[in-house]
Length: 247
Image (cartoon, rainbow, N blue to C red; front, side, top):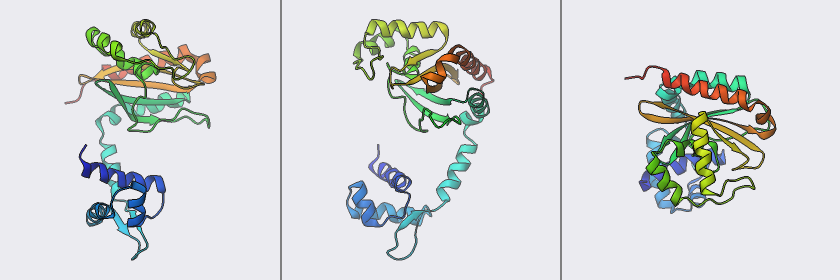
């Protein structure tokens, strides 16, 4: 990644983490970079209207310009426009976390996340990546999207380290698990990546690209309704895949 781009993103994420005004020395100290490098980025962001100085020596804070741009971008996101209403309705019906991720090679990045009303919930942020290929339902869905040859090569290279006592650490067992998920149309993670958490995922394709919908929550709430949730999940993927592709 370009160092300039990475540093600019670090600046913006730092303000989100700190939730307060920051001086030049604060930014340099927290990001562990020279003050001279901070000054260049800070001055450019200020000139472009993304950051303002409250008063001389009073620190800096982002303006709402970034929020306005983000809102406009989000309102015209083709994937969000396509899936937002359906996945919100699905979240409301299930009252569990519902997530949409885009598959790129061996990775999947969350594009939409909808949280339930329960205080105890599964959480993931937009921009996060599916954390494991072998211990999550989303990761198994990614594996299922590979050609037989690529899947075999990927399986050979994977190191299956236990994340919980339920993590599959046998490659033949993982191969069988992925195949079983492919056959039924959805993939399951029963406390394999995190204790107490069950997730289920299914794939759909749009414009030649694979996407994953995941339902996640505490095992105590998911397990009694697993088959019903799986049916809604597969139906949602089918409906999204069958819609007309946009130009």
